[in-house]
Length: 184
Length: 117
Image (cartoon, rainbow over all chains, first blue to last red; front, side, top):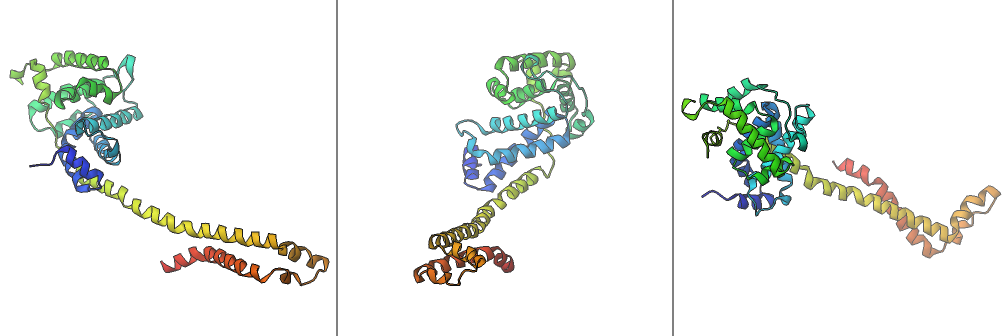
């Protein structure tokens, strides 16, 4: 039986690096996918994923064990990714414009293609990659990582209404781009 | 759940770089390594400064209260006598010697530590 996140966090807080290593193993793929999609830059995603785990480790005392671990970790990663995008002048304007930056479509499509093996998955990723950074982040956190709207709003530093708008727009955009399920 | 929702829930997870977890754990190890060493070094470097300051302060206080400083510095210029040390009682000599010794030891402590290394 594998240890729960809570047990591993307690171990890591006591200085058990192996316990934290298990958390890294458990969530690295999920987190990597998230930051890769937000940044669409494998190099940047690797840097951010590393920073997010290191930051989580150094701030474990702040984590409230009453809540699941991944949303907390994802929040750290998303904020780092937003800073990364902002530093490079790629998107992210808050409220009002609601993280609705320019569509810099297909910037790293080739890099993403190399990372996803099956064609169906590739099409899906390619379609999501055409969304704005805010829409991409909201879609990944909501659909793939099954985070609540309130948690996503906290992670992105916006209101719940903004997240709902981002998801609505993303769905609209994706409906135009994605063929019906049976045909993919 | 619409068809689109189903599709999005199935977004695949790409494989992370193979060295990702190793890099993370190495960075964490690097962060932790200097942490225990730093307070020890700080503690070690802290005592000579404190002892030196204390020794110097006691020595100066003794010299000032005994009046030796003014006598020794000013009198010879005026062709004064060499009787100044005699003004300092034997009682003063012991604490003065101890405090000056502490001061000198503290001054030399960094050199000694370097030599030990």
